[in-house]
Image (cartoon, rainbow, N blue to C red; front, side):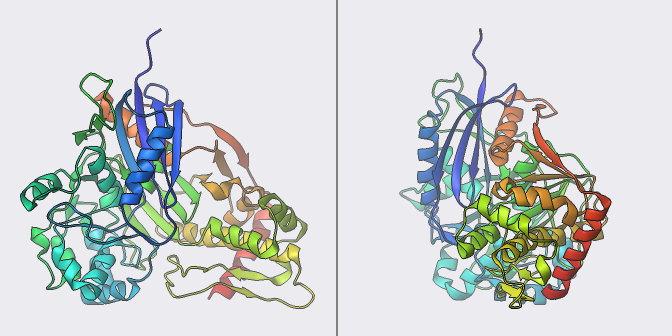
Length: 490
């Protein structure tokens, strides 16, 4: 029997790196390796490289892999000098220090103009605000910038065999081999996902007088099925004739959507470090309120997306507060009632992105001597998580984005309380796909697509473990819970 053709999908996320070696024909996982990333909101990118090498080793090495793509956390700012060296720690999407720069840039150009030029409002998560923070607070570092890229761009570049060089001449040649895709570029704040072009005038606003935006190398934007490079044979593909080709990769939200084979009308709610409600839409989304980000997907469509900084960590905090396991926490929540007898948690533990309140903190409302019980507190934490994601769904609906099906994924989706209570507060049934690494699957599916050379991506089956529904009465009750949350959130 002929051996299957293997591809690899890499997920370089906030918390870890995962390398999934996959059968290109079926999408079946063959091997998987993982390695952790450092905690925090800023990190030396070398940690990502170390984690990738460890994860690849745990996945049985990549000598037999014919194609590879990387999906990665969006927005992280990687600054490189003219030798290809990292200038400073990358500021990640959840680093809120650039909130003042986001406000100032918005003021200078106007919210309407930013949304129509780059598809998204400027909040602290967006890359361009971090560039502005460096220009204002570290001008010497800003003057050194020869290239700006994102986590998945940088890791792909390293897998292709590039890195710091001995001279500026060699460095600039290496930097010309930086590649990205429209999904990740659309989260920078200096790329237009409709025209698929960088807006260097916007980038210049962020740099001010510290540097020339036109002289800075930005990764070349490729289509989803376009080959960018070949992997360094010491890293991947040494046993494959012709070596291992590299796909352009993508941002984590777009790559996960691709891994789930989502179509227009589908919305995924991903509960990880962040909470993301991402829809697939055939048309761009311009949200004049600034609540929705109009990102791009991997296939030529768009991903109207709302994101919360706080998601599964809400449940983590509740378990820590009450000293319980996750299962015990869910059992406590089930013993309470909808609305937690009047207790409401506003779960902005690390500030918040949706709504845009970067300096906010969490608080419990409506507590009395009578209702302050472990059961009610557990219920309030679960309902806060669900209501915060309902905020994201309401923002999508307000723009007219079709929502025909909800898919629930991420670590937070494992909670039985989230699964069972979600349909009542979200107002519709939810499908829970089989627990898997969908960013890595999406990256592997893209790698298989690039390898095939075909117009359409491979059709890989997705297994739905369970579907959860709510009765009309339960949905009406869930609506009242959301209204209680909405009053306290303000």
